Image (cartoon, rainbow, N blue to C red; front, side, top):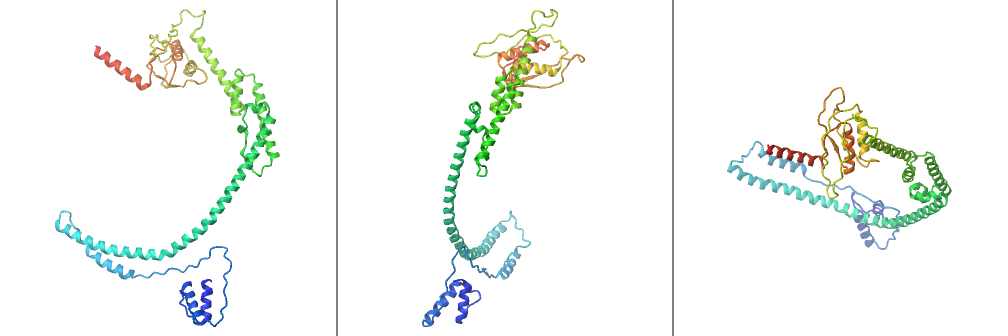
Length: 393
């Protein structure tokens, strides 16, 4: 029975109950009344079916002598007003020990009683929480089991639909299916229940036709690197990007050919032109020594610095195999007449690539030498050379 029903029954029988009486108290009073008057027929009260949690909460009332306690504590603490004990005074240190014990006893008395009252008040709340959570946990466990079965069925449905779409793709795409895996054009949205199979197949066929059209456009370009463009297209499915890639390869090849012509102009060379060093012999495979060509007289021709940088990049190797980091310091060209030391840091290069770069640099009158190693290693080597030269003097 609910608390209100118990209170109503007590009032009907003339049993007085305090305003804050609990259900247990009222039920006990009714039981005593039944035992005292067994001859009186009692109406049976049947609780309605329980569809959810029904809670009856009686606010907890706690009374305490806070005002008197605070006044007592303030009176005790007032003794310490104006007292400034000194760390250098033995008497003050002894007094501190005594006062510490007094204050600790006062603090412990308040804390022990506070915690005891709190635990007593929280006991029914904790019990209610544990019981309600346990019942709810039973419901959640069964629901989770049903959700897992439902998810398993959904995964199977999606897998079956994807398998059918894959079969349709392989039958419809023909040769393209051998070059482009199905997963590359698959759209996860096609597996949703809201997308019927005919609609998914229609969108799939549209994507296949778009791939075929892109392939035909590339084949109609007549590109120099046709195979590379097609391979790039089937990897990315980006027609414009594949064409741009092939055109870049063609530009790189032309730059390399121009550099070769500059390094070896052939029989028609002007005999009065500035000498430039020829290719350096390749070192033994065990260790590539530092190329150290003889200095070439500086005679800067009228070259654009950006064009010179492009020539050096092309000399290092095609298709971006080598990255050059050039420090763009002020470049001297005819007009200022100044030739000053400059640095070009090459992150990595083979002996053959270094030889080509040296030939290109010598062709425009640049003198210097290649030294193997990182910037730090070369700086240390140059420092040792200077020290040895200084001691030799």
